[in-house]
Image 1: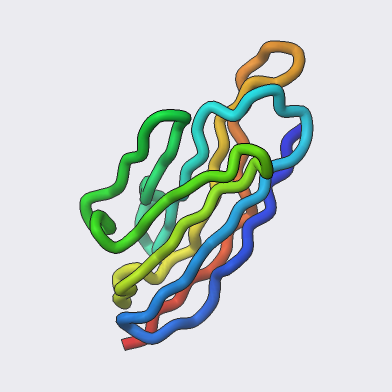
Image 2: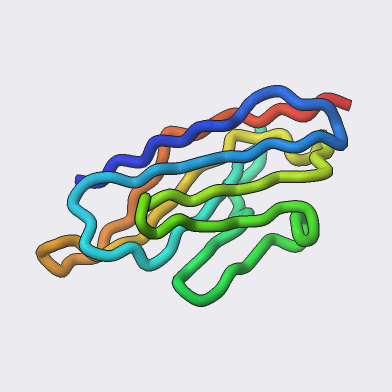
Length: 119
């Protein structure tokens, strides 16, 4: 079983910054992809940013403002969010795709962390 613990959410004024962290632990042989999703009230969950061993990709709405990074040694993924605006308000979820010690592929979600941007 894999457990994800997120931190770093909160309330920030428009134009401000926040940094989210997500630590993965458990039966992980190898992490393939770490990503951040978000879900605003009344909307579907959407991909914000993802990182693999060799590349990153971002939603168009956050390009140039958000940066995703990973510390492989700590099984941790970060999301640096700059120039936040009220449209970024949502619950942010960490997602990890990994290979277990038995060779199976797993997909786990964090519990979510609230990000609220005031105007």
